[in-house]
Length: 329
Image 1 (cartoon, rainbow, N blue to C red):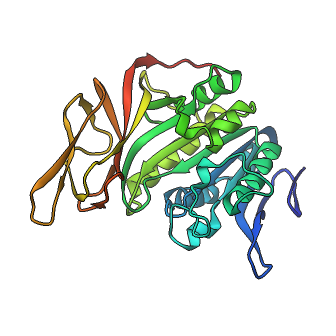
Image 2: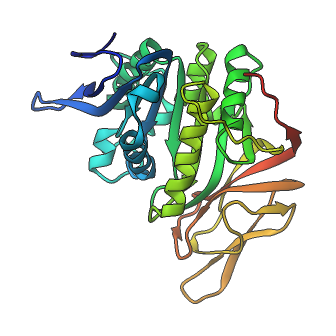
């Protein structure tokens, strides 16, 4: 029997619930919609969340598909599916909060008396710590570009980190970012891993949500559940993985219109062009190049994106090498 907010979910049930986030100025509570699938057999509780950035709805659509296909009779443990986590940003169709303009995935563990986003993060983090044995956060590039299909875990050498590595190996992508990035110190997956809960991110797509995007999300969701022995499916591990480590935000010195010369998921060598910035006359004012001896294009803004000086057009990850499956299980 599981208690979530105001409801109790028994084994074998599927229930709709609410995750309290914060109150609006008129006193009306803002809650995140949650679907809980409680398996008939015992097992771990997997927390999956979508739309921590309000314009990344691909994960929401993928969760809808997954939940519709699951039978509690065939499930070990419980799926806690947070369908839209950042409700205020979702309503505004915005990556960041429309209230304080904060990136929710940079302010964990939050604070009970902090800014609007800090208070939301505090409540979300407390609920995840209470209910989750494992954690998966679904992301995309929103509406400004594309990301390839890759997975992220916090690589700190802990038991939770090793378990998270096993989870990402089962997502169906050969590209794994073993992250220790300082700019992700306030991300939910980082903090939860440090609290002993194996936590991962899956990145897929951006812009229009395609059937291919949904298929990749579903592969990652089902693979993660299989890695946790929640289903009888066998996780489709790769023979080898491309391990990604260092990261760099590709910020520009000049403003202009972006003309990409590489795509999300490409692997480039140092000095190869990522894209050009052109002015309204069509003259190239800056060329952005790969900073690593071997780099993975982890995100790319779309063609025609208008860029201001200092804004980023891409995230590059350093290719550290190839590794076989660890199977830390």
